[in-house]
Amino acid sequence: MSGVSTSAEDVRWDLSELSPGAEEARAEWTELVARTTAFASRRRGTIAGLDAAGLRALLDEFDVVMQELARLAVYGSSRVNMDAADVEANDLATFARDRAAEAENELLFLDLEWIALDDEPAEALLASPELAPHAHKLRMLREEKPYVLTEPEEQALNARAPSVSSWAALHDRQIATLEIPFDTGDGVEPHSVNVLLSHLYRPEREIRLGALAALYDGLAPRTEVLASCYDALVGDRLGLDRVRGFADPMQPTNMQNEVDKETVDAMIAATVESYGLGRRWFEVKARLLGLEQLHLADQYAPVGEGRDFPWEEAVEIVDSSFGSFSPRLAEIFRECLDAGHVDASPRAGKASGAYCTTVSKEILPLVLLNYTGRFRDVVTLAHEFGHATHGALALERQTYRSHRSGLALAEVPSTFAQLVADDYLLEHESDPQTRSALLVDRLEQAMAAIFRQVVLARFEQRAYALRAEGRTLTPERLSEIWIDENREYYGDAVELPDAYRLGWSYIPHFIHVRFYTYAYAFAHLLALLLHGRYREDPESFVPLYLDFLASGGSASPADLVAPFGIDLAAADTWRAAFARFDVLLGDAEALAAA
Image (tube, rainbow, N blue to C red):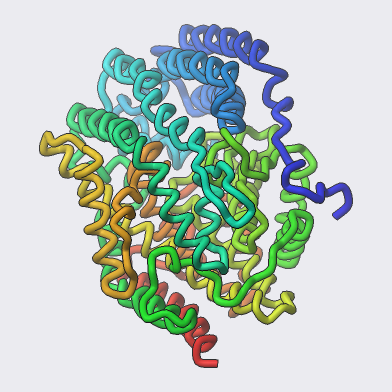
């Protein structure tokens, strides 16, 4: 690819397409709040009297407003995620949270009036061709009817959003600004949480052990604040559940995912029953590394020393792997890079981890990475652009509101994309040690996505249950739950240091979206099934898959995967998924026997 930056350090977001600057964004927020107020004044109280064409016009206008809200919200959050210490960015984020709450309050009437319609007129409207692009989301809104309050009550609840989100912002700043001294051999230097975690993939055992110890030493002084943030957020969510009448704390997430409790419980139970597969690999890996028992710091140790991948090569790999599957996916990838919609390298103050966010029909998705040159980072690049291609294709075909799918389904395209990148890497990599490392990493990525994420979900279940009993989520209590759940997974196959009790403290998903993590397990298992079908018959699979991406959230997950012959309600689905996992495990075990 011509014009690609040769260094990840040079790849930073250009946010000018979202807004020219903080002052301009403030002015735009003020104007947008006025616009939503005017929209609400014109439209409030009219929905019950609209025919299908009238409701379609209202929803299309609403879609445009929502895209403007998204554009400004993404600009503000992206500024903070680029540099958590930027005072101007933090002031803008505070201002944006307040304005967003005002705008959202003005727009609450639409959903509430739609939900309030009697079933017969609502069904007649839903049957009309004019509303077809909006129909699924409108149906899903009506599923929420038992849990929705009056408009003044909803506005009061929504008005507390800026205060509640301050706890999440505090947690994020605590992690993003943490600089932990550590020596990798070139002298002591400050390390971010992300960079320390990347050292757990290093071949030098002393660096892995030291990095893990340094991580928890660095986190320990902040755990009181981090636990308080989590306690406040969990307490607020449980209070909201009581007001709305939800049966259990997972119900709101399950409804957003459009997956019933029984299916989620079955998936989690099947995963727990399969913990032994993970322990089987840990015992094999200990032999490969010449150890009697794995230490936690050895969990992701490379089997063989995989080479580094410069940024330019990583871009070429993802471009080629996407292009071999579908030229359209590679085209979206290149367009995002060319538009300055990727922020690649880790640095002090930058948000940890990696994510992708869609913006609007006119603006391509943004991708944040913390690229350190490891081959696992190449797969992360593919993963996040699995999200980006999903969002871009869905926005081309769907309404703005209908392009978004629930969390569990949203993680399927990203996971599938990383499997496609794995295939390309394994096919084209000539270095034997790197190939071995890639083979092991493919298995361990699946283990982290399936087993580890279920461990995290079970941790959340117990934390919410404890808080529901009126008990504060102190660092000590969270640490006890954390270590209990992890011991059940790792068993005697992995030595867990006592400091690992603090492993809950830096995980952002607990803070931002409750029970987010089970979506990774759910999606990875589904992606393994889809990948198996792709390998069996690529020619017929690719058109179906591109249609799946372009469908976004316009149908339920069950309906969207049905064309592939997958039945989410069937127990055999999860058995077949773990059979696919067993294939990956067998490949890695064959490496150990070679």
